[in-house]
Every structure is written in structure tokens, then in C-alpha cells.
Length: 302
Length: 302
Image (cartoon, rainbow over all chains, first blue to last red; front, side, top):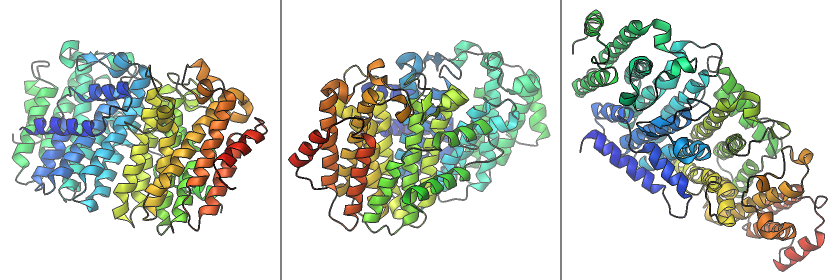
């Protein structure tokens, strides 16, 4: 099985552990709907890739961390889609949770996914109890207040916000948690892996901003033009479209460049490069020259 | 300091650890508003009381568990008050979070409190790492799907629901977690303490139903008559008012009766009896005869 298939399997297994015919059915169905079918599962793939690059001596724990991060991501999307936030009816081409199950179940689904993420991780740590607290701490910092994805979403409610601080919290924090948790799961120091998470996380958010402007609804599976409509800080609004694309390419280059030398480095650099093309395809925005120039400037070899 | 004062102090300390001037301010203020001033803090008191009854050899862990349970309780109230659920503008006599800060911050405050609860607990477990996983598991089961308080709230969205199953999940689950976590924090077996949590939790929910019918808004600090208005399952709707009061007294008797013989037993029984009077005061419902009869039937001595 590919890493992505292994992740799908592990997520399904975790969900099954918390599904019980004597529990409330709508919540159970909504949790599954929020998690399957998933997106690219890039965050958990990143966790597994960093764990692999560090020897991955406890694959169960690494997978537990990967699944936790993905469940937290899915839970945050459910709350982001709520009427009081994005009021989005579509996600990955399907009705969002509140559109399909109502707002109450959507609030509870997000809540339940937060708890389930940590619960699954605790179960996965039975062979490396001394790593449980640091893995949990790393992931929780990427999610909670004052600098995790929940805080990132809360920046949207403030009248003054720095685009960088907002994007680092809203998206970057969970990417940083993903790479760091991968290292800790394998008993390694997370520090050398933080810049990879930081850069990639910010690149993701900038890519989202770019696609919010130039993407069509079909390719994104969700409505576009939301940043402008909701008066939300965005890289394209701050830097213009070509400025944002150049910034994105710079972040990808920084991510590629940050991967520490190790047996898994070529595979990780390839994953980042492939992701960058998936995120902002050249077909969508003709910028080959810009990209070539930026990568050359950063002296990064593909 | 009294146990309640110690708890207030520990909650404040936990919040401060996650307050940062560089984070979003509204979220920070809303989290504090959701937690202070608190209610009776009965759940964390129960955790500490059970830990004390079992020797409490790691007071830091017991307090960490107590604070976690209270933060989870406060977070659940923030979400319960949302317009899509109770649509309550008042809680403990003050504006609810969505009334004071808007719906978006209210959703995020509940989310952040869930994460913070577990984060604080992880920090408190540094001296008893082998107890971290079981304490976390116990508390997480009391909160998440399929049988914790989030599932309890989800039962309100189902067309068919057993009152007992609903109340056990919606309120009982966190009480059971409170007593169990107190035992585990002190290195003791949680099983003998589960019935105390179960009974007391159900008694709390029944008391809430009773006060929803006969309480005045001033004494509850929140609007009354919500169960009927929201067509929610309730003990008074199912058993009638005097039936519900009799049921409540029976649950209190069961809770008192369940306390295992130990040095802390008299103190715990007294706490339960005092709480029962606070919950459904005789002044509010003249039921001395009913109460006396029920307690006699259960052969429980005060």
C-alpha cells in the first residue's frame, strides 16, 4: 500500500474504534462524512515522511500522530465551513457537514474530531510512553490558543492582523506540528524539521489565496472568491496576483531547501515539488519564468 | 485555601500559560470570560475529593485532571449556549460568549478550551508519566463520541432517544470521568468510584430539568423553560414534577451509598448531601416527606 492508502486505512480504523451502534447515529455518520473522502492527506504524509527520514522505529506512534493531525484538520474544516464563518455549502465537491446534517451536528462533529484525534494518539503510544507527552504537546500547540489553527481562525475576528501571523497560525501551525510530530515519533529532535513545516504551511495558505482568486469552483470543489467577500486577509489582496505567486514559489523553494540531509531527503524534496505543482498548477497560472527565476535566486536544485 | 479556592487558582494558572500578547486578543478574553467567574466547580472538587480519599500521592496530577475536567465543562457550555442549540444570551447572570463576542469567537472558544484542557493535563503529568495515558483516556471517553458529553448533546438531534442514555451521556459521562480521573491520578483503581460519578451526574441533569421548570431566572442565572421550548427530553416531561424530584432524591441516595469505605468517605458523603440541597433546595420544592421516604427506602444513613 502507498503511504496515502496506509493513512486512509488507519483513519478508518481509528473512526471504527469510536463508532458504536448504541451511540447517536447522526453524529457518527457526520464524523465519517467529515473525514471520507479526504483531500490529499498531505499533513499526515508529511508526518510519515519525516518519521521515515528519521528511522521510524515506532511506526504505530508515527501513524497515530499522522492520523491525529488529519482528524484535527478535518475537524477544523467542519467549523470553518459553518454559517458564522465561511457559510460554505460545498467541500471537496460534497455538501458540508452543516449543509448535510444541520449546524448543531456540525459544531459537535468538529468537537468530537478534536477529542478523537488525541484519543487515537494516546492509544498509539503504548510502546513509547516517554514520547507521548512531547508528541501531544507539539500537536496541541499547533491546534490551540494562542498560536495554533484555532487562534489562526480567531485572527479573522480581529480588526488588525498581520498577514504572516494570521497565515502561520491558520495553516502553518499544523504543518509545523506535522513535521515536528513525525520527528518526535521517531525519537528525533523536531527542531531541524520546523522550517519545512513553517514554509510549506505558509505556501499552502498562499496557494489557497491564489486559487480563491483564479481557481474555478469545479477544480477546488468549493466556492471561490470568499476572501474578498468576507474581507479576509489574503496574500493576493496584499501582494497582487503575480506577487502572491512569486511569494508562493519562494516559500516552496525555502521548504525544499530546508530538508536536512538524511536518507529520506530526496523523497521529501520530491514530495514538496509535486505538491507545489498540484497546489498551483502552471496550467492555472502561466508563471514558468517567474518560478524558474525564483528557484534560481534561492539556489535550490530540483 | 479551600479546595474550591485552590481550583480557581489552578485554572487561572493554566489559562495564563496559554495567554500571549502576540495571540488574538478576543479569543483570549473570551476564554477567560467562559471560565471566570465559574459555577460551583463541583466536577473538579469531586476529582480532588476522590484523589484525596485514595491518598493523593501526586497532587499536581490530580489538580491537572480536575482543571481539565472543568475547562471541558466550561467549553461545552459555550457551545451549548450557541444560537443553533439553546440560543441562550445569559449564563451565570452574565452575557454568554456568543452574546458578548459573536458566534465565531464562541465556536473557537469551545474548541480552544478542549485543546487547552488536555494540554494542561499533559503538563501536570510530568511526575507520573505512566498515569498520563489512563487519565487522558478516562477524561476523553467522558467527553467525546460515542458516549461522552459531546455525544450527549448530539442525542438532542436524534428523533428517538432514551432519557437515561441521553442524560448519562450529556451530564453523567463527565461526572464519571471526574471520579475515575481522581482515582487514577492517585494510582488507584477507578472502578469502585464509577457509580458515584454515574449517579451524581444523572442527579445533576435531573436537577437541571427540575429547575428548568420551577426555578426562576434570577436564581439560575440563565433563562428557564428551555426543555419544553426546544422539545428536548427531560425528566420532568417524562416523569412529571414530583416524579422527577423523587427520582432525583433516589439518585442522590445511590450516590451517597456508593462511596467506598475509606478515610475520605464521610467528607465525600457530606459533599454529596450538601450539593443535593444546593441543586434542588427544599425551599424551591417542598418535598421533605418525599425525600425522607426515598432515603429510608434506600436504607442510607446521613
